Amino acid sequence: MRAALDRERFGPWALVPGASSGIGKEFARQIAASGINVVLVARRDALLAELGRAISQEFDVQYRALAMDLSQEGFIAGLADATHDLDIGLVVSNAGTPNPGEFQKLDRQLLQTTLRLNTMAHLDIAHHSGFPSGGGRVSSKL
Image 1 (cartoon, rainbow, N blue to C red):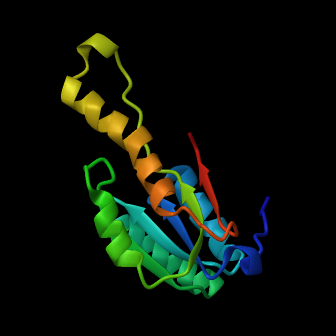
Image 2: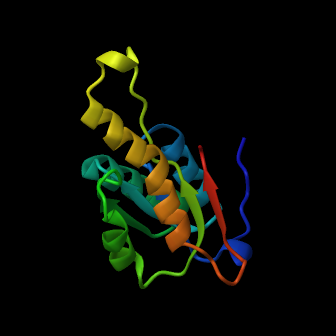
């Protein structure tokens, strides 16, 4: 099932953190199928480039692939710099990762990094993408 998005409402560009695989990849595909250009963000540059080329050809949209680690403090400055020239009206904040296993046996640093990615990264993106005009929307899988 495909959900058609209104390009007039959301504008020419959407931001999809966590686009390299899984649900984020499918969000990016469906957004592109609606004729909205996509900014693809994740750590794995090769997967982003592959997805970008595929959706660009299939749906005749533009893409920008940004390889960055959203679990790193201060990533938002790089994201802002790489997208300052785009009119982004939709954000689907989908980046995240699980840490299966026994909690007490997991490395504390790994847990802190995961916490940062799964919570604070979404806060940073939503805060940065505030959409003061009220036209855009921020969505998160969390």
